[in-house]
Length: 487
Image (tube, rainbow, N blue to C red; front, side, top):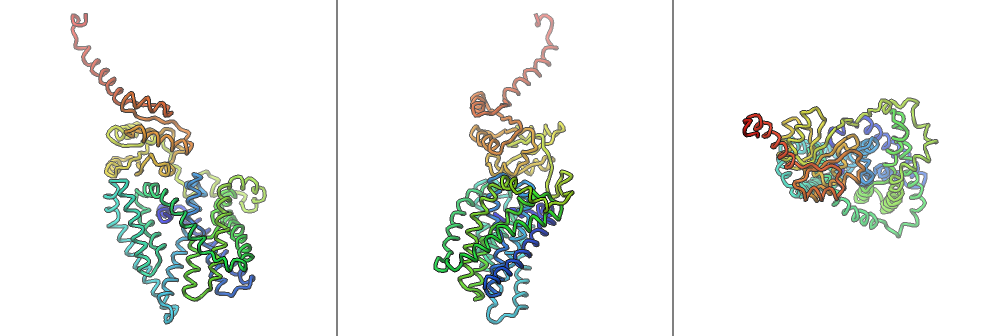
């Protein structure tokens, strides 16, 4: 799910601020955290391990929270996902290095480990490029003919690369991340992401069960004070360094503050990282207990900080002026780097015979039109005819979140049945769509059901076609009638 967010277009837009902020936060947390842990009486190698572990934030939890708040495509949401991905790339490289150290343990020098890691990363990069360039697009095109088959393929692809990653000496997390990344640049990404959301929410339950099971209560008493100190450092220090970095780069204090809250917790990768250190004999179980306890505290507290981020900002805003330039040039013009400000007059959901002709007709009339369709063959055909289009199921609220609804004036649905249109209408209401909605009805009975569901404008293609045919035929026949026939 995290890898699916790593669209190359997104990386290109958000890259500079994501890279600078992500690396700045990594460096700050490692250096200051290392000094704090040394001051708490730990040896230097344990301090280094725990300090590195504190730098990683839980992208999957942040994506879940931002999605629930409908802020995943906001400016701070896009930037936050960007530098969280930088963290994920860093932890993947770190875990690859740890795996290489584990496989070379005992008789491998630093150069041997570095060489083995470089070879593995190079081979993985080449294999992934070949898959993304030649094989994967053809397979996904075939799978996308069925929404259910596309979902099953995405799960199978993720688990297969996870298993392959572990077999190759990396980790299953790294393999699954690369599986998502390989699908992120396809135009089926949003549809896959929407379909996987329910599975993600279900499996998060087991993530927290696993997180709690790693907490060793026998060492809990000795770790309480260090855990409180490090938790405060993560909850306060990490957001402050992000706020300062983004303020220096020319963003407003509000954007920096909302982005900073997303790094105020410890990731599941942190626990895996320290656990790998235990298997190598570098640290003891106490380091894992400390990291797990800090993870539980920071995840719990930061979740509420993010949920109530806007009221929290209103209270703290008077004291945050220090972190904002006099002229925040990145946002002063109203068009922010990384944000696509494409506006649409109409979004047409369903591009069958009627919907496709409707969308193309509106486009020919000079309107900005975006089409939504889940049939890949129709998607390809409409793209060839110059229509802007998104692949996905418009009845899924998670997919609707990715559409530019805020700046759209009309949503027109040509979906074939009343239940689908009800789901679409419910999703638009949940997203607080402020434009107009029109729905196509096949007959009077469907039209009445749609009116009862709250659809403001109902279109009747058959009735309109008959009326048009009557008017056309009348205009042709009447001039040919003789005066006697007219009488």
